Image 1 (cartoon, rainbow, N blue to C red):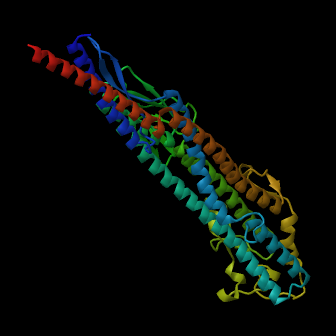
Image 2: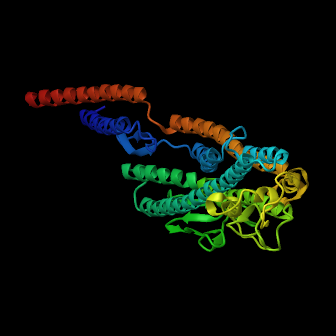
Image 3: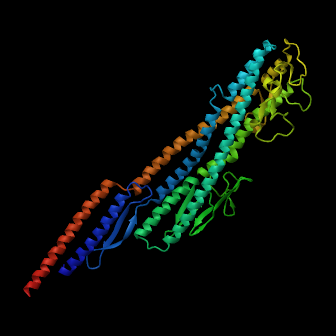
Length: 470
């Protein structure tokens, strides 16, 4: 090797060592950033010896990215559902709670039974009124909690759509930038990091599939096939509350619809399921309890004329032929039995339509009220508890079903969270920074730098010696 070749080779080695040191320093500085992928310098044999820098490569595993984002979408959906139902369940209590609807209904039934043994006992009449009020209040409270779940779901939908649209717009912008930046440059790797972060954000909202073209631009589709981002173009998401329809561009991508092109997973799917399925179902169940109570005590009260309200009312009125949703939030005890409202407790014994007190020992009407609890009652089959059964069976079934939804969501969330964490750890292993490895690389870079410096020093001394000989 000539002196000039040695100098050029050593110079290229020093240049490569300096660039490697810069890259390793960057790796160490970003070791705690999960959105940062490890960098390495790509070199090849240079013309005439030495090395030539090809560019900067970024550690990536598209398969692992896809697996992690899929698990992230599944977990995000269950997290949205479990969180909302957890709050709702804490409001309505457990089956063993004294303030749960089943237990309050049982207490009301028991108080009626005690009153039937002594219908003229004013203290027992007072207890029946209070237990009836407690039961009605528990239904209103459950209805209010359910309304909060719906509000949370709708707020979540709006936030998810904003997050998704912002992420898609950023992905499209990065696609455009990547098309103008040389592949293998530090800027190119930085753009890939930022795009990966936005893809993760989008994947938490809805399940996606990502493909890359020959210039590195990403095409993003929903798991159902709808194109979300292609090059610099975005099909934005929008939600119509009136129709419950989610659209991407001009396509209906509402989860669960026929011919869907959207995604069944992600926090957006979870919030949509709450708003469009879970809350309406739970509302129907609560309303059926309220309807059956109002109707049952109207039918059991022989003192009532047509159109008169019974013991339980629809916001102070009789049930009516047509009932709008939210009845559980309007059920109330008839003020005609409440002395504080100008009513008479004796109407619990004589009937809500009684104009004068009856015999103190007459338990006929009270026993008619009690018979309601043992008789077969007709229910809306859509409530999920069959078309008929006793009131207690229906209430217990509804309460169990509502609690089961929470338990199922929390159980699924626990399993999916563990799975997504496993894939997250695997992805970090594939592209993350290992400090120990990077420190070892720094030592090797230092050795390479010293070796190349030594060659340059020796070559310089040889040239000086030759010049002095002339």
